[in-house]
Image 1 (cartoon, rainbow, N blue to C red):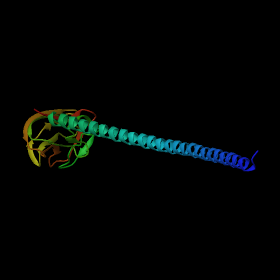
Image 2: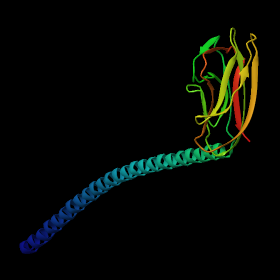
Image 3: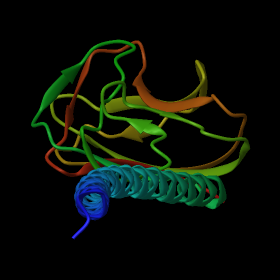
Image 4: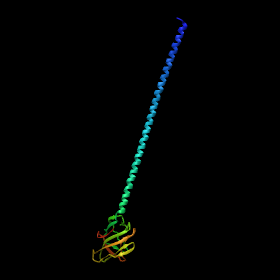
Amino acid sequence: MDVSSMNEQLHEFIQKEINVSCNTYIQREMNEKIVTGLHNLNTTFEEMFEKLTRNTNNGFEMLSKSFEQEIKTLIREEIKHNVRGTEKDSHPAFLAIWTEDTVTLRRNDIIKFNHVVTNVGNGYSPMTGKFKAPKQGTYFFGGTVVSAPPNALHMMLMKSGTSIMIPYASVTQGDSYTFTAVLQLKAGDTVYIQKDNRVEKAYGRDRSTFSGFMI
């Protein structure tokens, strides 16, 4: 066999093997890089998806809380509106009872009917004994005062510092005087029962009362 021909064939074989090895190496490297790239891409995608999901959940949670807060605010405003409307449409009315025992009343003392039974519109104050008209209108007032010996009892129904009438109970023990009055009031006018310029005794004991309402 020709030596030169054998050398040529050997060279071709070696070159072929080198090419195959190179191609195999290159293919393996490419496959590894592709796998690594896909893994990294998958990891990145998972991280992005997790972040997106977390942000979306946070966004929905914030939106839900905001919506819930808005609903609560609307409900509170509606309740306030309805309450204001009810208070505006309702007529002021009150009933208060004097529960104290025998009391010496001095000149110009105001009876403070301390036990409030009814107080629609909060016009009556047991701290002052005065009814303050929440709004303008015509009002009916009634009351009872009970005397205690050894004297009669002279009281005055007052409207904003002016005497309207003088209820009177005689010296007889437990005598009472019941009065009624219809008054035209402006918003802020006050009505109350006040002692005249004499010092006299009176009974409370749930027998003396003061009431009124808007007609």
